[in-house]
Image (tube, rainbow, N blue to C red):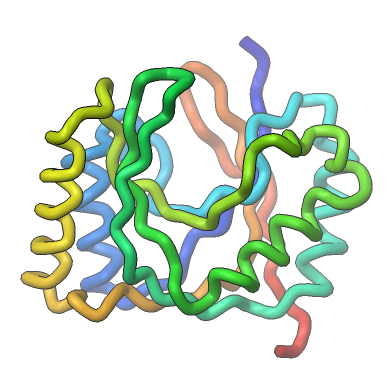
Length: 186
């Protein structure tokens, strides 16, 4: 399998919040937690041949985008009917619309042909992946809410997106190719 490219943003977080997210992902999303840290994904599974135009376009979008402050408040289990799997995600309250705008900007121009119009983008940070979408996933989501509350994050996890990162995924690794700061004035 050739590398697939993604555009992600690794959040800047308070140390305790970063440790909490890492622990949640290690417990509920272990297949990815060792490969990549907590992140938001803005462009998905692009072919390797898109790398040249992707680098230029990400640079232009980052130059026109201010850092995004966010607060993750909602714990949302999501069933994927296509795979039968389920995910648990944290969805931003503050920063939600700015992340949608960023996704749209990234999918204008050279990335437009890779956008799947039938899939609605919902900003999120995945903390869990499960082989089946059953009631145990909802119970796990409730446990995550309790874990967040017990860790002092009952009102949410706040942070900031300050850069976009292009990563490449192969069967064996996820590697960072380029990181570009978000530099526009707010």
